[in-house]
Image (cartoon, rainbow over all chains, first blue to last red):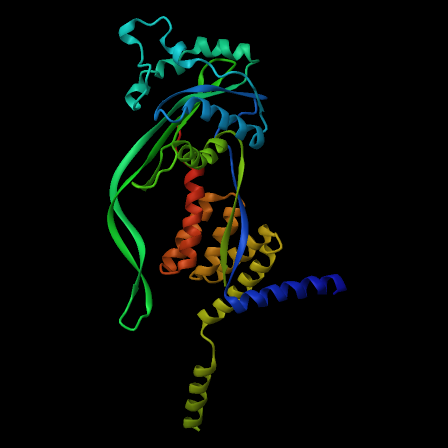
Amino acid sequence: MTARHAKIVSSLAAVALTTACGGYSEISIETPIRATMDVSAFQRVFVAGFISGGSEDVDGNLETTRLLRSQLRTKSSLRVIDADSLPLQDVATEGRPAEQTPPAQVKDEKDLDAYSNLFANVEYWKRIGEEYQQPLIVTGTVLFTPHQRNSIVQREEEVYDSFGRRRVIPVRTYQERKGFVLSPKFIFIDGRTGTVMHSTTAREEILYNANQATPALSSYFELMDRVIPSFLSTLSSQKIKGTRVLLQ
Amino acid sequence: MRTATLVLAGLLALTSTPAWADNRGDAKKQVEFGIAVAQKGLWREAIYRWERATQIDPSYAAALNNLAIAYEHEGELAKARGAYEKALELEPGNALIKQNYELFREINDRATRKDSQ
């Protein structure tokens, strides 16, 4: 056995001995997740904008377009096209009779359904594709609505017994809670053909105590933070870092 | 003479290690070596060791837990799920395996979420 081998064996033995004493040890892992879509045919991506609605405090179209572009710039190999987002609501109403015009003010899912024809308009998306050199087009809908629910909440309460000893006990109370629901639908369109390649939906909600005043915009970003990883994993392979416990 | 033979046989029975204990001992060596190499980033070797451990002793929940972690790291999510579930079947009350499995499920759900195409 060479000195190098002896060193490796002794260090392995030391690690094994250490873990044997503890019975378990933490280890960092990186889980690779393959992209849902094959985007190898595209060099560029155009986040075209969204039909948005719900809360008036957040411009879902503007914020989502901005956020997705910045995420794609740093976490995807595609080149992000910097251009004004498309006036999708105008496009959806163009040339349609008044009774078939989708509502200008989107309040709920039903209002958004009226816009579904827009995303199936192959000619329109093909034209946009030609204009931007046939990129992958990202569009869809974003609904960000205020939400209220009464539910049982557990909190910790300090109590002192007759000897003055402090104890913390869980107390369950029925509380009114307010927050927001974010329901985005991301639609991926092939800029070469104008057809929908893939679509993905999500629903996230956040609730606060009714007396807590949280700005709508910060709730929007908190909820988008939860949605972004799955959006990115649609387009590019991701490695998710985490920690696990190895056992003996 | 007969008594002496009986005493000897009794002593042998008491001192000899049962077969399952032998298996666990051998499997434990594989698990320990697997941990040491995984900590050095040699995950394929770790998988080999922990697979050996589970072959030697199929009731060794810790080996299955470690194997699941290694599969996770290699992106073999279906195999990871299987190994975690077997480990939990063997030790349903083990909080550390449960915690690992919960963390795995979060990632797995994201990776296997049904989207429309």
